[in-house]
Image 1 (cartoon, one colour):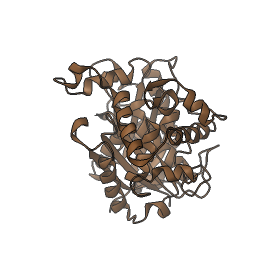
Image 2 (image 1 turned 90 degrees about the horizontal axis):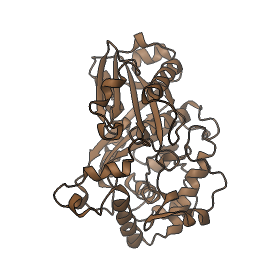
Image 3 (image 1 turned 45 degrees about the vertical axis):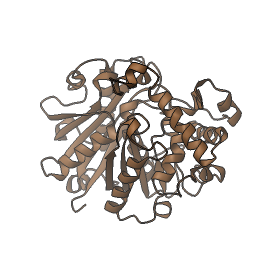
Length: 381
């Protein structure tokens, strides 16, 4: 990018089930905290971009009710459907256009209000898949997981090891929903089975939560903070419908990653990245994500788990925050990955900090079997 944009402030809620506050209160708190973190006020904001869905909010034109809470009153305001990382991309483009200098991006979901797995049913083909009534986000993930496992000699123990890694990492993250410091592979394998091989602890929890970050142009970023986190590259891609694509690979993520790497000048992601935060809604997805990000050859994601490569103290830490398996407030999950990556670069990830983290990757997804993907490369000074 010729013109640069930086993350200069951020905040997230303590993600949990059935948060005892209104959606408006939850959004207000993270928006205000993000501005406080950046050291600016509402009057400094040029544009506000929010992320949610009417389906998950349970009301039409859901952003209308949040304009006051997010500080968008008498401001330029837009809404992006679904993942908050996509809202950040829209805000980024608005700043790069020269129309705005500072943007507040906010994303949220109160998943306890409307179960996201039940809502996913309504994204299916209404003339065939809905009529049969067998598919939803969990059953489709189970089909993908079994296909991937059979094709690549991946065991249920490998999936359980992903969960153990992430949920033990989350024990040191005060914002995580699931915090399980003593979790074992056996406990994961004994957890409730939903659709073989998907178990309660190999899928993300139903979480309430919100997240916000502040983006600024280079000129304003240098005025606001001594520790800007630069957006060095971004890529996004939307794959075909569930039945029209190869579920053995995350092709849209591969394309998004390639675009982000090219923009950031990355040729060897394994050696050039210090930490990675991904939105793995199911444990098998993390193994597939390793491959789609070009960190290893196709079908070799399990090697990273077997050899502890992606542990917090491994060669390339993945999800030191716990990832989506630790907290999944659906529309906010990708934006949370950006915040967690930025915290690592600024050395502010208390309890789960990776020493010397200078360059990070953050990943967001949306849709059944990770249909839509977005990748950011973030870097410090």
